[in-house]
Amino acid sequence: MPYVERMMDANEYREAISKLGLSQVKAGVFLGANPRTSRRWARSGPPDSVGVALAAMILLKDTGVDPLTHPAIQNAKSPPGGEPEGDQKHQEAGA
Image (cartoon, rainbow, N blue to C red; front, side):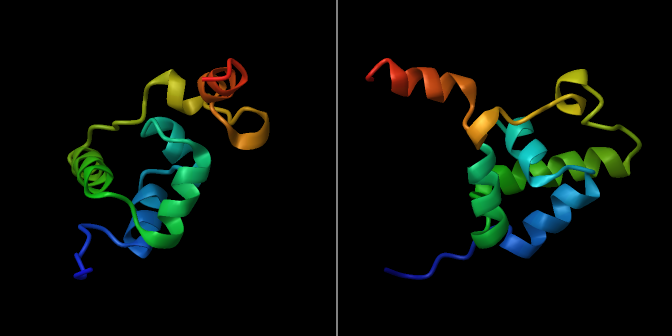
C-alpha cells in the first residue's frame, strides 16, 4: 500500500489541541469522537477532516474568536469507561 501523507501528524494534533486548551478527552468530545479515538489520534495522527477542523479553529482563535466558548465543551465529561452514552446503549440493545 503506498504511503499517503496526512495533513496533520500525531505531534501536530497534540500541539493543536493544546493550543486550543483541550485535553485529549475534551478534543474527542468536541470533535464528535470517542475519547479513545482522540487518544489514538494523539498516537498516530488524525484523519484529514479533523486536521482541517483544528486548523480552522486555530485560525479563528488567532484572529480573536474563541471557537470553544460554548458551555457544552467547557463542561464536557467522559462517561464511565470512556464510551459515549449513545454507543453504550446501542451495544446493549444488541444492534
